[in-house]
Length: 276
Ligand code: ZDR
Image (cartoon, rainbow, N blue to C red):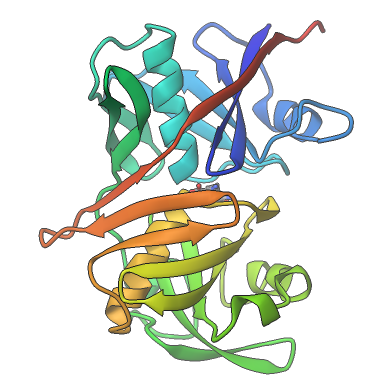
């Protein structure tokens, strides 16, 4: 079976064409995302057919769970489809667990330089995140206790759940120790991705992430969108900003009509074949 390996801002994925495949994706992801016994990746992107959009994308976390959406993943997925000629247009529709989204290939001097994705509108009500203990209010700068310490959180759904924590100094933030305690906190019935964000200025955010089902990764596209939304809601940033991640930078814009546009890189790393 053929596969390719892609990365966007250091968030890396195995892409496979699942249109004629009979595969247990949970087992596949657990085996091949492993960096020692497998290919190594933060997730698996699967192409499937659909009658609701041009194509359907599924994403599987390294632990075998299936999230609704993946921002860096959809850029890599879009570029793979474009480079392999599966899709001929620069702009097309993708059915995801977060609805139908529209990626657009960006080219400079005839060469693909990245992908912009219309990520749709963020969802803010507690039930939509989902988070319990806050009624059905928006959760903006509200306290939560994690490992005996109080953190103020802002919650945003980009189809998948995000909990954003603003910190004064990202270097002093021990994500390794606290990340999983946010992920599995009782307030989040479907667990959560958590972004730790230092505001550099009102158009630059520095973000690190603990991803649900994957632990620390070098970047998170939906998390970067959620961080910009949280920064705007807390009056810490403008609606258009650059989010710097461990593996690169993404440009995020929250348009006045409520839609979010994410622009960033998507690069092929290598191609290969699995024999089993
Ligand atoms: C964070 C993510 N890598 C992205 O770029 O948006 C998405 C991966 C899915 C995530 N681990 C989840 O929601 O479970």
